[in-house]
Image (cartoon, rainbow, N blue to C red):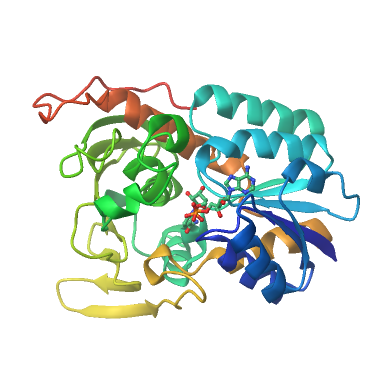
Length: 345
Ligand SMILES: NC(=O)c1ccc[n+]([C@@H]2O[C@H](COP(=O)([O-])OP(=O)(O)OC[C@H]3O[C@@H](n4cnc5c(N)ncnc54)[C@H](O)[C@@H]3O)[C@@H](O)[C@H]2O)c1
């Protein structure tokens, strides 16, 4: 039984706390937040030790694992310090804000041999698991095309009420690194990795509010030789569950409305109705518990989990999207896409 702590008790942390309550091989032991009001409330609710200083918390020898649920600019520093203190890590996405931070994170992980689980929860949505199974068993043939879209709503107030969102130095970007990174991850997951990207991104609606992007589209060249079409925006009026389509010769698998459809000329069939997230937003996907549970089962009994390593291609593709779109901060949408960026490991 592992003793887990959570650093940062904002929007996503209750989903981790809820998952830990359901895990056989872990329990929530401590939480840390610099905001004492939310720390006190959470400390009482979960009846655990509280800290305002995470480096103090890392000195506690009873703590085995650290869940990092803080703003993006703290991910690398906190993960590195947790590993150096001998703890395994569950890291919220993104793993890091740029290539330099990612390289440091990977090098400390390799040097310490600690386990790092990366929260890419949509891989474990029941509908996505079924999609993977159908791809692997080959019954539909080869994938000939991939399309994915994410249409969410992030208002001016969402950014104005947050000290770290909407800025490169603290969020590292916005739409792509924060919301659409999960969708990007699935392109590589189903396409045998991402080889190169060509992208355009801009702040098309919130250009007076954020210095980062709210809309992006890209052509994503995949390891299986197929190219994917990717579109994402935070400017929609509502938060729709993301859509992912895999096209085969005679069928289409469509994950949309948190359902998996199999569509042929003759028939449209619902293969899976996904479960709904407890303690969180439905459109986030319901896979957090599976990711966390798999991680603790793996620490206890061996077996695989969603590791930092398995997310490196996605992270490098993410940075490539930014490099390709080479976003200007002007109000004009660039008519010509940036260069193709192919240096993706
Ligand atoms: N996987 C998902 O579905 C999902 C969903 C939402 C957010 N996230 C990710 O979770 C992370 C947190 O996002 P959020 O929306 O919960 O943010 P948030 O702003 O709501 O919460 C962050 C918390 O961290 C605390 N914090 C800041 N600095 C700290 C420090 N030095 N020590 C301790 N605590 C500190 C803040 O006080 C705040 O309570 C981000 O990486 C985000 O991308 C993931």
